[in-house]
Length: 474
Ligand SMILES: [Zn+2]
Figure 1: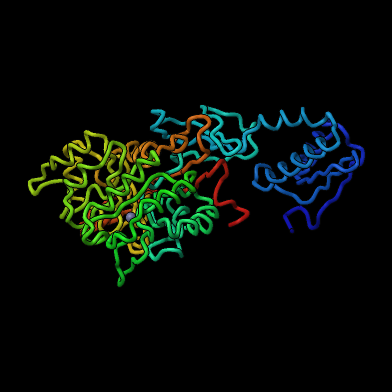
Figure 2: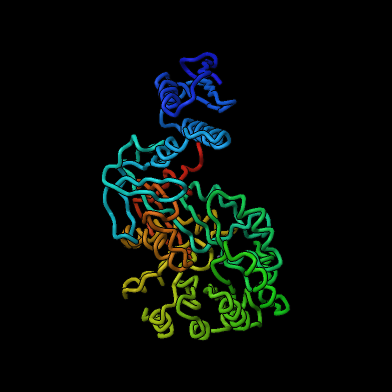
């Protein structure tokens, strides 16, 4: 590798470095000379090779330091040497990363102020007015930006390649700052293993899922082929759903049922009843989607339990939450009072500016803002979570509430309160946002337009304590 100032690698040897103090001196010397170092412990002797000139505070330096420390610790362990314990303590005091000087908005802690956020071992380690830069292996200057706990999209479809409606989470995460995708029932018992192995486990952005009560998951969903997975009750088997759900509890947040004339044909409420049975066994909530009656919205809302999620809550007619005179339907208010969680689920059929305005004017906002991003709405009208968030800003929702509906409230809905907050010990996820002066004509699912001049844009993210995407991988 050719880096300015060094035309070729420079090698140095310290054959007799045997104490942590001398190691530290060697490391400092390597850094003083802007050289990266790789150490290895061999027959009690330390050899340091300076490899390449690098800048301080880069990811590469951090990695090399980790390599050095890891190697030395294991070397010391193997030789039973006393030397490493001291060095180990010193290293664990360091933060892996500090986000410096941003406007930190963490609704879960009622925080909206300039702060630094530090991460260690994949978790939030500290939050403070002026954390010392020297205490971190890496620092990112985020002054002028908004720093929020990692955004969570409660309703997505990211079983890319395994289902026709799935989109690839990676590019959407990068452009929208979404650190956690909740897949809303793309996979059922029959294909959950593939979703887990080929998508969830390979993904850097977190993916958690509602399992579809239908064995097949959402298996036939395209512009020309649309067959509802709950239209044939032979596919809706509670034993299979429960068995596979129990095998995947670490990535599962609930059970999804899509009902209504489109997704459920003549099955009526039966798939939702069975989903609730399964969810009850698991101690988890259901997420219910209704498209076209029957059943009626009243029938659906009446059987949802506190903590269950109604998605597409601000739909256009039919099944809008309001009457023609804009008054809120009684069953909607009753469900809300009972603790049913309201989720936006924009998608290509699930969100109307009119319904939303009517609800907001009467003091009712959805708990969760989500995109329902899938193959047929990723290029509009939903786009991604950030685009839907900008729509809510355009409708007059205050920014801290928009952030609450994509962090704290979602974490609560999925019962993962280690997410969606910068509380010390929480998952080390963050989204760095900026407000851009850009005029956009936002469109809802019935083609109504709302124009606004300020849009949220993502300028980076941290997942499990690491800046992502890693510059080395870009
Ligand atoms: Zn959906």
